[in-house]
Length: 116
Image (cartoon, rainbow, N blue to C red; front, side, top):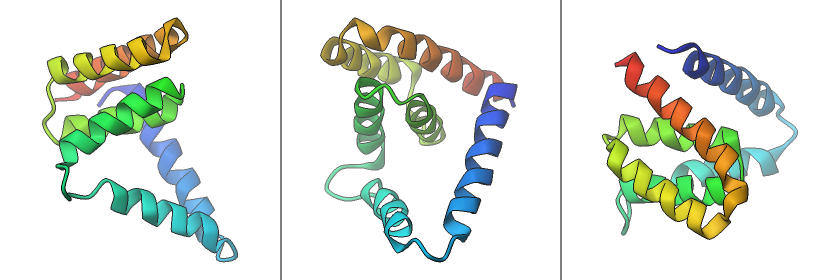
């Protein structure tokens, strides 16, 4: 697995564990739970929901969110072509300020492909 994928997952897991270990913050725990449930199969399939999450994350310029949705999309079998179309929409909607995040997204997707 590529170092950027390993590093992202290790940091995310470590910090999520710390956050969730704090028993005094029910709001954050509920938000984590809501996030998990929002991306479950429903009227929209999981792949569509992940693409929606990816586009929203790119428009909002959240690199960690982009990486998360890229990896989840990859695990659910989305193709590079599907990801590229979604990122094209994100760039159109978000404007040129999204381009630096687009670069990082392409780099991360390549790392996911290389791990296979």
